[in-house]
Length: 202
Image 1 (cartoon, one colour):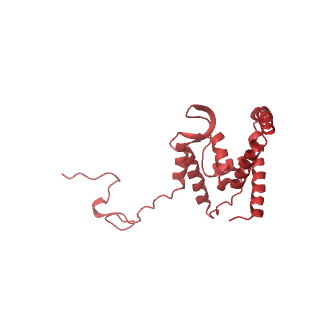
Image 2: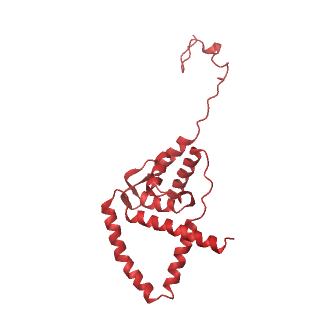
Image 3: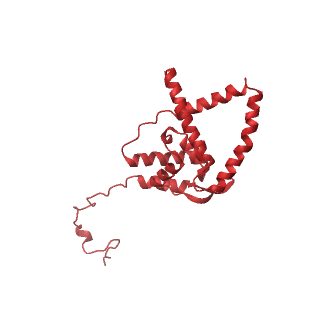
């Protein structure tokens, strides 16, 4: 069981991670228009929330602090050991994406990034580095795709994720000894014939 000091340290570390993620979410790299929209929405939503907490401090303040501390605690959970083999890491990342997709045709990045970053595997990453990791795993990002009733957003198709997973699977090695003969030798019956052909007998 974690001590009081360990708990406080984890909540502090998790709070820093959460604050960084909120900052990245509000100001996505290379998308100034979206950043303005998100910051404007935050400016509209935060004051009423603050006023509600101020009016009911004994109810909403402990609830809000409790939710934040719980989220910070889970965010700062130690990451599982990272496999030494890069292909194993890529396979785990692809399998995580497929798990998020489920039985849908794909997943939008606006849904994928928060859920992946909230997992212990991606806790040290931010959006730009996660995007690089997805590309290194062979996952193709489609600029405009439809998932359910939402369309026109960038995302990853399930077919592309499945293809990336198959590409990491080792191909079965061919049998070095052909049936009916030794390696590199043709059987007497097939001497002088082309593949897929056989001389007709009168």
